[in-house]
Each structure stands twice: as structure tokens, then as C-alpha cells.
View 1 (cartoon, rainbow, N blue to C red):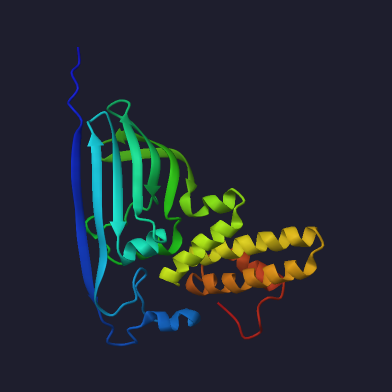
View 2: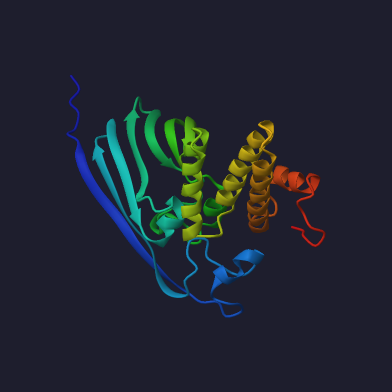
Length: 254
């Protein structure tokens, strides 16, 4: 007869702050946002001392089954989650000594960067904040392949794209605009807004509502230009669409 350990509640967390000062350019990175130039922090443009993130991680369970919730508050959480304090919340089950199943909400799988500064080697977290979908809802299976080697497979939906996928475009636009109010330099949010407007323009055109279609395509053009200025090597299809449709002025380039 196998006797399992009693489930335990564990609480951990961290708090970080930073000092920011540019000696070769303006400290207010947001001032150069429209130009897509200038030095800036991907999660906070404040100069001087500033808070980064306060997070608390709660876990309850044993070595076989349990639940983990990670909550955060601060400028980095605002930029990451659009004001939502839930970073991760998922159940886990160790089906065997080599297989773990997880279900719930997870961070983006960018293994070299983490939201919490205590677990993140690069404080700026530029890659994760600039180019990835932030959180996912779904089911993940992880496998121990060998010594210090682990693989995984999952079925997930990006949290910040669920509304659009469900057809609730007004809610999706509201979500992305809230994220941009907190940090205007999020190319993925700008791109997602452009995709929604482009889709709405296509549907309006099919219904022969040409004025509405033109308005939607114009909005899509403006947001794609902003996204491409921040990430000029991305969104190649959008760049081609801008060129083909004549949405680029002669003096515009990326």
C-alpha cells in the first residue's frame, strides 16, 4: 500500500525595483514612440527609481497532484497582462516519474525569459514582451527525455487573442487598447488590432458597405505601420499588403 504525503500549502514571492537614466538620449522613451526610435524600457519608461513587479506564488498539493497560482502587481505586470493580476494559474498531475500533465493558464514558452526578475537573467525581458503572445489557456504534457532534457506538447489559445477568436472583436479591441495605454510600444498588440480592422474591412467589403470597409482598412493600415516601425523584421505579409494597396507614402519606409 502506497501512502501519499499530505498536501502542503507553500507561499513565495519577490519584489523588485530599478533605477533608470540615459546619459546619451532623452530619458522619456515614450516621447519617441511615434517615430519608433529612442531608448526605452519595454515595460516602463519612467526615469529615476521605479517599482518593477511584486509577485506572490501560491502552491497547494504534493508530488503527484496540485495547483499553482502566480499573482503579480506593478508596471511590468500591467505591460504584460493589461492590468490582470493573474499571471499563471494551473493544475498539475505527475502521471509518472517522466510525464507531467498541466491544465490552466500559462506564461508564454520563452524559456530564456521569465516575468519575475528573481527568475529572469535579463532584466529587460525584451524578447518576451516584444514578440510573443503573453499567456495561454490550455493543456500541456511535459516529458523527461533524458538527463537535463525535457520536451512538451500542448493545445492552447493565447489569452489576449481569445476574444477575437470567439468573434467578440469589440472586447478584443478594448483589451488591446488597454494594453497600449499601459505601454504604447507593444508591436503584437498593434498588429492584432490591425488584423481585426482588416478582417472587419473585408467583411464590410463583401457586404458592399464600401465606406465602412475603407474606414476599417485605413485603421488597419495605421496600426500595422506602428507595429512594423517597432518590429521592422516582422509582419512581412502586412508589409506586402501595405505596398500592394498603396497604403505607403513615397517617403515612408521601414
